[in-house]
Length: 335
Figure 1 (cartoon, helix red, strand yellow):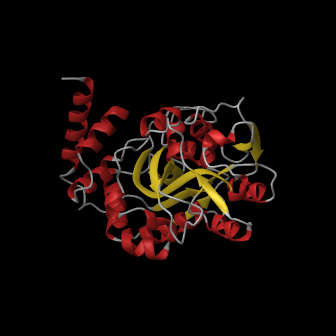
Figure 2: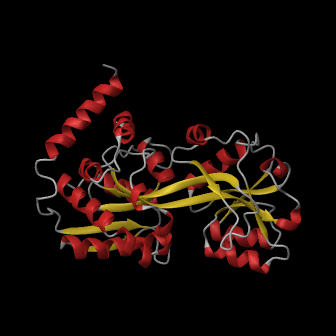
Figure 3: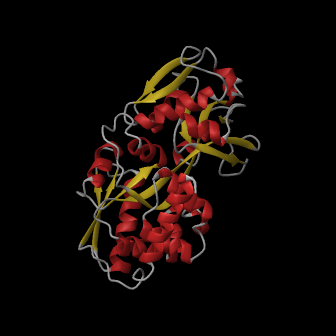
């Protein structure tokens, strides 16, 4: 057998052995702490929501614990100091591979569920006449963020899909994604990357004469190309709508995910119960927390995860039919 098949067989055996107890055992955790970004962030909002869910459904005290960013709390999950964390697929992939700023690989962290999909692309003023990434040659372009190292690599990868390197543009550093919107509106830069679902983007579009425009990925921008450039990055389709008037036609852009990940404290039984609580209550969670609405219940466990799923979560998802052979093969490859 090939190495991948052997690994898949070992993983299948582990899941099979676990099936004798999962779903019936009580949670072993006495308390759940969920690492998030600072208070006021979407991650803190979602972390508070999942804390409430687990407290109600698992009978375990839970709370969201804000930090400066994933680079702070992902290592804490690895050593068992916090229970769970909300992390982007980009940060998860960098931590798994020990890419700076992560000094040590987080090989013990496991995923519970993909919870939030973030379509991500460069935006410009409509009045600029810029319609493609190639049009950004020689322009002032936000590339780095002071608060997020992983997005800088994602931005470079997106630009490279149109053959643009850092010598082809004038790279600008921004304080953050929200600050970048103001930089474009005020004319301090020509283009900046943005999560297309952000309310701030819709507000800015309404205030700028002529509005804003989202730029599609370049001709090289396949899933394979983006994934090689930045683990966790892939393509999605975007359509013009009332909620996204800055998307002028059907286009392809980049996207990345946010996962609820588990540290070393989480047993198979606990992970099973967490996955079950999320899956069974997903529609209500979507009603209560709007950022979750872009992720279908059937898409909580995609097969492009940057770190392996927790065996307990995988067991539950297999039972409800959303953890496939593709998932098993991908997890085995990561291990």
